[in-house]
Length: 238
Image 1: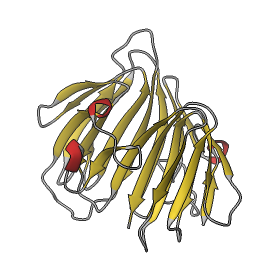
Image 2: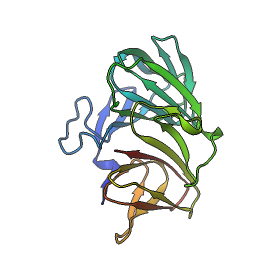
Image 3: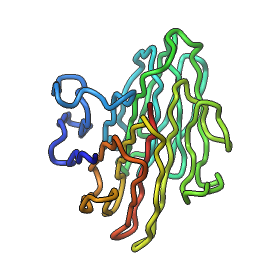
Image 4: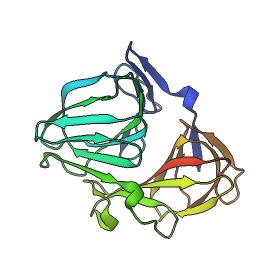
């Protein structure tokens, strides 16, 4: 089964320096029909104004992934980690027993366009940690996608405290890929950029565009065809 979550149907938050779209319930946006999908708790699409950002704030018992679509994001945390995240890189933060961090747009002219993703961990009170990798340097796997995060950190991916793998695909217009799912696994497809269609056996193609998400369950595989250049994230979950 495929269930489309249209970009325009998401929750919305807006401040003078921040525009946000919420795939799942978050902050003041509450939607009982969209609380989470499996262990995937948050996908927020944020546009942060130049020179602005989130001051020091605390998280715990969550795996947090930041993915920059355009612009840059400066990270600083209570463990002493600092870094600037740019397109082509991914950041993983294990909040665990507690971590304080800030996220700012370091550019004074260009907005930051990003996805922030929260994944519920398999265990609570883990030691907090932080990691950042350049995913463009990772080799593609048999499905023509790059593995960004996995429980064991295989293929130089970020190690994450959950039975989940996160993949990224850069597809050219007209390119088609097929992704397999094991029995009793669920998938989520998030389109960061571009237009595409997703299809399962016996079902008509579902048309998707940037900002859309697709929940997948009860399927052994899905086929994705890019309509134009596409950047996508694929989550494989229990």
